[in-house]
Image (cartoon, rainbow, N blue to C red; front, side, top):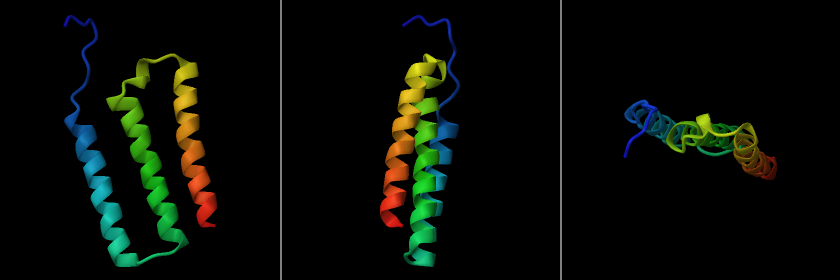
Amino acid sequence: MNSSRISPPVWPVWLWLSSLTLLLALLSEWHGSGTLLATLALGGAWLKGIAIVESLMALRHAPLWLRGIVHGWLLLVCGGLLISFA
């Protein structure tokens, strides 16, 4: 496959995603449950979604309207879940 664009390595994104997942898992064990934990977990899920969309799905180079739809969907899902915990 010939490509004029050289994509950055994927391993830093995977390392960051794995670290964030482990941090949130440790936080849930330490803190227990509650609205604060749900907010932090959904915030982490939103950050991980942004990283996946921008880096792994390569939407960084997509048209603005497509990026807006995907980011809006992610915000709608995370926001809806956050409202359901309140």
